[in-house]
Image (cartoon, rainbow, N blue to C red; front, top):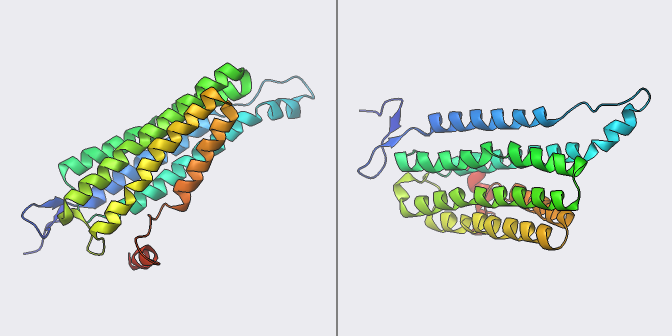
Length: 228
């Protein structure tokens, strides 16, 4: 007898809920959050003939928008690849996923703070804003690490082409995020906030380039990715 539409039969004794509903809910959250970012863009006040000058003055806030837009896009790509590692979900895994989404939905707030500090703040204000953004990004990495650790300990959850070594290798990515986002915040606080912001951007690029996961062998993840 085949499994119903809401669950699939795992190889072990437990029954796994279908991953489709979790993926659909997560995609909806990502879509809403990335759209909310545009609400922080504002038409500047200006006198006649000074629109261009006012727009240029608001330029740093547009930079904050672009950085966060790309960041959320990178997170969505990583999350999409993450769900391809599993063939079903449990209550615990769903709660871990909710923790990931919590980190996503708070991004517009540090983005707004950073935007305000870049346009209207002084160096001290910008230092606080960069540290806040880096802290939010570092905390974002924690539930991803929990997800990989949980998946490593529960092999019946993994998709058929995913082995233990591949899951273990992926734990390095959130650990890197925790450490280097934290260092970016420290750099922004102690040395220069713009250097801290640059460090955040570099980490976003890193997670974008590794969104399909770290390889455990020559071209292994490329082949498995094409298979999915």
